Amino acid sequence: MKRGRPRDERARLAILQAARDLLLEHGYGALTVEGIARRAGVGRQTVYRWWPTKADVALEAMNAQAELEIAAGDLAGFLRETFTVAPRYVAALSGLMAHAQLDPAFATRFRAEFLARRRAALIDLVRAELPDADPEYAADLVFGTLWYLVLTRPERLDAALADQLYATLRGRRR
Image (cartoon, rainbow, N blue to C red; front, top):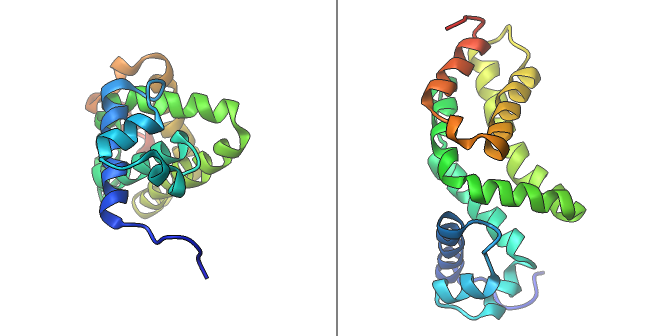
């Protein structure tokens, strides 16, 4: 049996939207629980009641956004959506990755709740479309490239690179 006040779904959605908007506007480093609460029109305690840290709110907001923006049912579409959406979220993604390097407990949640979900979606598509490919290697190739560029050369994240990765996965050169 759960204790405490049940979540108000409108407040939860407002908080997640506020966190997403602030991440896009200012990046993870400038994100605060106070800022999220103010933007969402709720008290700080409402945020803290459901999420222990700003990293946890940001993680849930990014998960929800990834599910909305990267929902392609085919491998080529998944890669294109991933590599064209990522530039908008570089400041958020790089901040969350940096936080994961400093906080082992958050790193565990980040891997399980964000990274593993996106990886599983890609692996499912590789298995369905490229039965001769090694899905784990494909995921390493795609997400290794993605994260390297998010952290070092975000200007390279685009549809052309996604198409090039797709051709590589299919065993063709472009």
